[in-house]
Length: 509
Ligand code: GLU
Image (cartoon, rainbow, N blue to C red; front, top):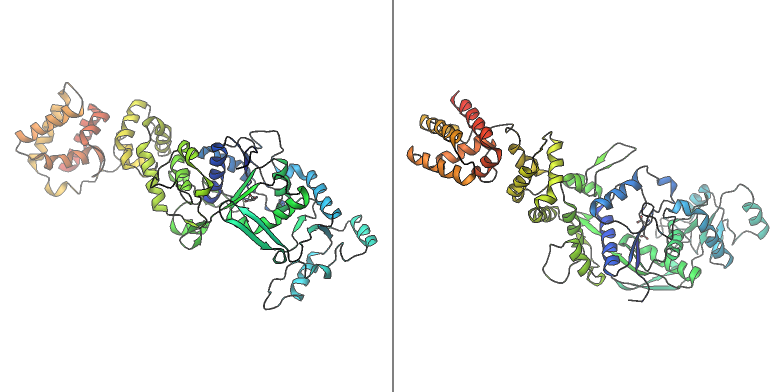
């Protein structure tokens, strides 16, 4: 690695929900920055005003906050090389575009949308069904290469809209090193004359990304593989504008694959798993797409899943905390092949993380789940005990409702089916005795309650197995949950007795 300070960036266009591939790009950038004592910058790439979506920028920040991947510099965090929103940097790009024109690397183009469409029709062939504005065509269009100087001057000083296009050299090879893929070479004849500055004066992504990576002193530009085809254009712009001086090192992360190729929002809907970090509501349609957060994922698990989707540390280890990832991460170990997202595996990670998390850590999250179901818990200590007791049974945070609600309220539904067929008078008598015994018990703890219960069962010639299940149904409402006497200890004497009495009545009627 070179000696320049590590500065990386995540540069989203705020156009909708934040896909898990986007969060993985954030994560790898973040890990690399932290590992090398560098800065992680978040730049909002909002130069395409037709794609502006209200709320999308704030949503991105919320997702990063939830994931624990806070930038060092951004619109919200400030920094020395702002503004960090490209729409606020509009004035800055024009000079660079003009410089490119002056040096013969770009030109003004006046073609109307109709003329462009006509060009596509005219030059369409079976081998080339979608002709591009490139070196084979540019001299047949209306631009500053084909028009005389006076006409160009006149057009530029009239209301005629125009764009600035890069003049792609013919038949040159552009090579650059990708930290994951090695040397990448592309022939320039294959690339069209991309628009750099649009008619509204805004730069396109290609110009803005290069100018900003330069001005923001970005040392490494890491992004998704979908940007690999744009990289040669960026390298060329770096060469023309800055003589390649301090060009960032590049790395393009592999695609995240779903069940059928590239993972898409539709896969999520079809297979019932989230693809966005957090719930996203499309402001136009009102459609809500569920996020990992709301589905019940811990952020620790979510980023762990993303970390190992395309990277490993060279051992069999799968569970990593953020600190460990920072320590062990390296771009060399990011794979170049697409990584398949496996939702069942993601659930496994979440289960592991719930098991490993302290009751203290889980407390506010579990409380929020219960509150959503109108179960308010005031006794924090009791809730912590419950969390420790049931967390092994929860794959998603949302499972805590089913696993914990009955500690704080009567079971909503008591399923008598497992006990009814074998219910008899002897058992009814036995449970009356349990009620009397428990009402008088001097010590209320699970060991004591279990001992008393078993003694009484023996005295009544009942096997513990015959009466334990009814007790569980009485206290929990179904055949699930942790140790039944531990449940009794936590819900307390009054509630235990009340639940036994209530179920007895139901069984007698
Ligand atoms: N604005 C691009 C995006 O939305 C950024 C690509 C890059 O990082 O260069 O993904």
